[in-house]
Each structure stands twice: as structure tokens, then as C-alpha cells.
Length: 95
Image (cartoon, rainbow, N blue to C red; front, side, top):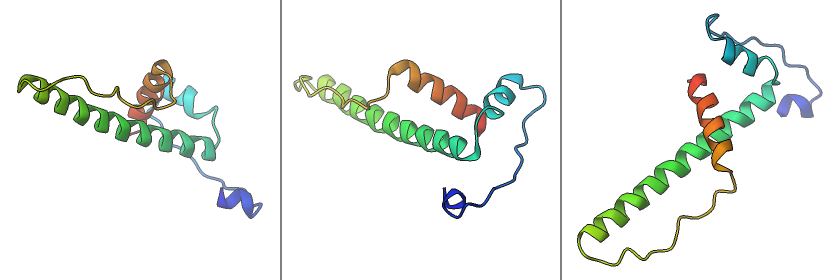
């Protein structure tokens, strides 16, 4: 975005496994900024998933110890489950 602000064209290349046609098709349709945004979305989803997993583990432990499992539901992330799965799948291929 800094390059956009300075009206400077960023020229770069991405190296993609030539046997991974799906990743190539995904990357070639996006700009640098769009790919960076996808990476940020992925990192955010991974963090949210880890936090929810920890909360679920805590609820399971509490339920196993006989405490009430009536807790507030996990917070909404604002991302549909299908979209989160797609972003996660695409993002896992980036790393």
C-alpha cells in the first residue's frame, strides 16, 4: 500500500511449484496487495481458530470436572465457514 501511496509500481515475481496448477491459477489472478491481504486474513483466522480451540478445551475440562458447560457461545468472526475453509486452504498452500 505504501507503493500505491507513492504512486510507485512494484515489480516482483512469485515462485510457484510448476506442478501446483491450482496455486498458480490462484496467485496469477491477484495483485501483490491482494495477496498480502489474503495472508493477513489467513493469519487472523489461524489466530481465531487457536483461541476458539483453547476455549473449547477449557469447556471440555470444566464439563469433565462436573462444572456447568453452559457458557456463552464462541464469538462470531464475521467470516462464513465456507470462506474460512477456502482462505485456510489457499493460505496453507502459501507456506
